[in-house]
Length: 464
Ligand SMILES: [Zn+2]
Image (cartoon, rainbow, N blue to C red; front, side, top):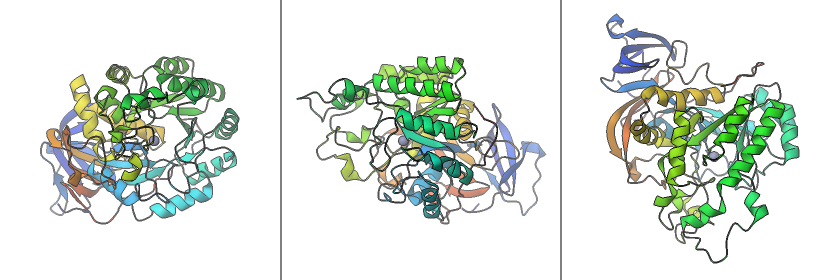
């Protein structure tokens, strides 16, 4: 079957139907899953384009709801063309773009329209958009909801870029009042300036080329204090709140207590916090820098336990590239380097390589990487599940097959990544977006077929 073909049916000996892996045929009509039939029950006619993938696993495409595309304005860091090709190569059929690092940031209705214009004709997978909450823009929030943003993100600490300032309590109260009753969700970068206000974060004489110097400058308490603020707001306003990229396991208790008290609160972690640990990061290896920081191996195992216990809801990439100069590799200075890790293309195998060793099964992968992420951005009526009526977004992959990450096989724009040269388990063979074969074995259909996903308003407050 040729790339770009409209697929009428996908057949495999290993289709993930509900919690069961079994031989089945997924029948596709008008880009949607029409039926899922047992193998013998299917009798397509001769004109029918059946994609038979043998023993490869077929499951819903990954929905990565934390991706920094950076276009317009910082397209040299990453753009829609390259990011969505990387996504397609990694079995990611939907990305949700973060509102910052692009210029302008997605913080007004006009800026959202500009973002949509810039993304047009450049997306190889479906793309939705987060808006941003910054000081003073609260009256833009409802118009952006009506225009279809998936929700909003804010920072409780400097964001790294000046055009996306962080919010104060007063800004948050104003924003929460606008969001009440809309069903929308507010995402928090949950670190505070606690250390800056309570002591020197950069002890004199400490080597900035050592990872430990950077780690000590952003201790767990910065996340704990920020999450305390989030839980209080969430309980007070009953607006859906979500903590992005939880790095420390220490605030999990606070999150659990708030949920038990009725807070509509969810939390994600990222592939890097689950795959990497501070002890292994070499001096000067700034490709490992991100905020909050990668912490120690004990903390990493605590995150895995929390994931297994249902205390962490989902796993995302937080793909956040920049140009190589900003990573300061020549000096290896962790304190000066841009914080952000690129991994969009490798989320599924990164997760599976570690998760499969810890007793996670394929249905867990769908729950954590597709279904809950679709729920967060209210795309769960069409994305993230393999069932009739859903978009025919599929990842076709071999969970047992190992491969090495080589620079030549990386499709995002700036190839620097902490994962270069490592071997992962779980190779993506093909990706289907709304019934079209967009990627197969290293090749792409040249036409970007991805759509913009505008999230319809809901009157009820959907919760996980
Ligand atoms: Zn991010």
